[in-house]
Image (cartoon, rainbow over all chains, first blue to last red; front, side):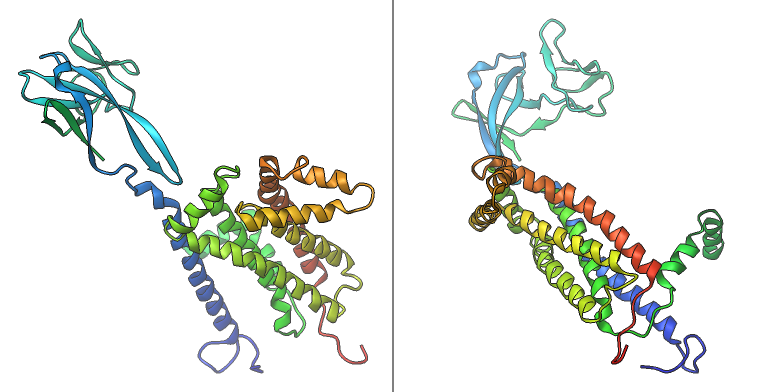
Length: 165
Length: 219
């Protein structure tokens, strides 16, 4: 043990100051060593994709009338944590000529409610905050910041597929 | 600026007096064995932090407990590390608190005026063991299940009220979902709150009475 009195030594760093610095440094290192793993542990699953990217078959394209958005519902599996959940995906398929199809998500881009096709007014309507979208999914009125999301569509042997994930 | 801010708060909170009482109090010349209590408290704090982190993902139900623990250990970034700290920290808690107790016995530090410090320490040791017992069940694997089967059966051999104690611990005749959730509840609510109150008491008494010096021959 150093016999010098704290704070009045001839050495460049007095004992008290040295212990203070050592405590703060070691404590700080331990703190960082816990904090960084903790942060990655907490945000870990948040940034993870929960469905694999794949083409999902919706059904026959003959069900879609020209000019009338048609709702298709498919079940997809989602791996979240240790749970595999089945979830229903609803997609409006729209065609103007029977050859080119677009697939619109029915999820309102405002706050995530589900939109509905209203045949009389020929518009998509969201019941939550009165948002209105046209047949291509563009915003007609209401609070949504952007058009309805679209999925990539392909037609194979008269069957419609969309790309999810 | 820092000093002025510190003064501003000190005038209103008087925290410097508290700080000095805790960290700048006079202590006799002691040795490294006197750090065992602080070491125990450090690990206890670590158990608190890692335990809170584990509850973010852990689910105390029979059909999900095991899967959620496996998910924490194998899927989450640093999950193995957080769970590992909590797992080994649990053993360290028992080892350190027993060593701390042995030092107090060996140096006779439990004597007047520190008897109440000793009593609170005895209860703290029982709480630490309670943490170990209840926490052991939570991974809900074979080892957990059978250890708790045996552990509760041991409580059951107490004369007269043994069977009653066993049923209260298990929440019924058998180990079940009820057992798992009540062990979880005790592990994350009852024991931590009791622990905090008692550590507070224990520390207050250590500061109030000061620590005992190393005894010498003829003392």
